[in-house]
Structure formats: C-alpha cells, structure tokens
Image 1: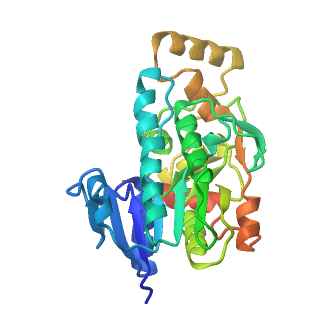
Image 2: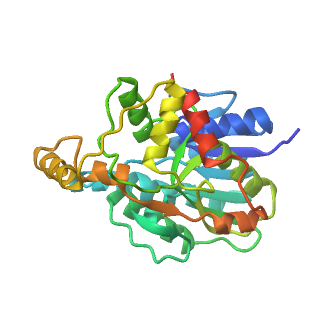
Length: 313
C-alpha cells in the first residue's frame, strides 16, 4: 500500500473530485484537499484545509494545483478576478511548495495559454499567444513558475490540457447533451471541424505515470490521441440516447447572419459559440507520450466520450 500524500487544490471541482478518488481508491494515496472554505462539500476520506490554513499542512509528497477560474471571458470587468485566482493563487501555492519538503509540483494550466485555436497539432514549441483573459492569466502563472524553479532534485510540471471530460461532466459537453435530449436539431451540419479532448481516464493514467515514474520536468500538452469532429460527438450522443439526431445543413452565410445577430443582441448563439462548435483546435500529445515511453494512451477518443455520455444523470 502506498504511503504517498497528495495535496490537491480545487479538490471539490470536476477534475479534482475525479482524480482524488482515483488516487485514493485505486492507488491508496493519502489525500489532503485545499478549498476556499474547509466546510465546503467534501469527497472521500481526504483531509481538508482552507487556503488560510495552508501553513498548517506540514506533509505532502506531491502538490497538484487545480484551483482556478476555468471559463473564457471577454468581459474586462472580470479580468481582475481571473488574475487574482489563476495567477496570484498559483504564486501562493508555488511559494508554499518551494518552502515545503514536497518533491513534486503539478500545475494545471491550459492549452489556451498557448493559443485559442489551431488547425495543425499545437505543440509545446509554439510561441504562446493567449488572447482571452483566461489564457493570459494562466500564462502569467506559468511564467512565474518558470522564473522561480527550485534546484535540481524536485520535479515541476506545467500541464496544458485541452477540454477534459468524464463522468458527470459540466460545461459545453453537458449543454450539448441536454440540448439533444430535448430532440432539438443541430443546425451546423454543413461545417466540418476537428477538436482535441482529454478523457479523465487518460488524465488519471498520465498523472499516475508522472508521480510514480522518473519523468523530466517541463511543459506538457495533454490530449487524447485523436481529435474528434463535433458531428462525430453528436453521433456518439445519439448512440448514448438511443435516438437518431436531426442534423440540418444550413448554408454558411445564414450561420454567419445568426452569429452577427447573436453578437448584437447578446444571444447564446453568437460568433464565439459557433467557433467553439465548428472551429478547429488540434493539440499534439507527442511530447508527453515520448516522455512516458508509450505509443498510445490507454483509452481511445471515442471510447472516452462513450464513458462520459454513459455517466450523465
């Protein structure tokens, strides 16, 4: 039985809840969770501390920093909150790591710290150009870590995952699933695209390898092996619901008109939403696979999606 102790910030979030249960139930790690308030919803057998109690945590082999604001925004009035949480909070926990005896620090950044869209596989050598407040706040946190790296012997990983999904998902995938549950048609059938995703099963596999193996520190993009088109995801939703979904092939000029009207009237259907559904965002996972000495991740892109849609209440 392993005696490793993981300190996980944002443990009650979607990702934190999934990975903490994996390490607790499958690998028998001891988990320490950090949340804004100690009495927030708690999972498993983890010990809980608030951010104000950070200095009371005197043990921990590895720190996984997940806490942050995770949704894109173009509202400048929210920028201060994004930088406070995504940048300043990262500085706080990394400074704690530097003073602690922990051997490893894993920071969950985002591929949007590098770019917002990509038609070719986005890799770690791409010069970062984040355009959203979300991506910019994460990129500044990355820079702070890189400018304050500890001496040799301690590992620091900056992880840039694309959109993560798994049982009880939130966000766009859940909204898309519930949309088709109502029997509504998909109007963007005339547009084709490819986007990278990351299943929670593959994420747990990668994290386990990083923590239990001797993997070089650095920046790593995380994604499933194959990108998926929105059309294919819709087909997988249909399989899960056991219904044939209606796909309408509206002309491109009509879609652009809808988007322009949505921008003007601040409607849910706008240019940003259409870009997310129909734009390309392809992320390379070759560097992390080479570091792990594997050719493929254990769960295929489609199987990961099937698992996610099977576990929506």
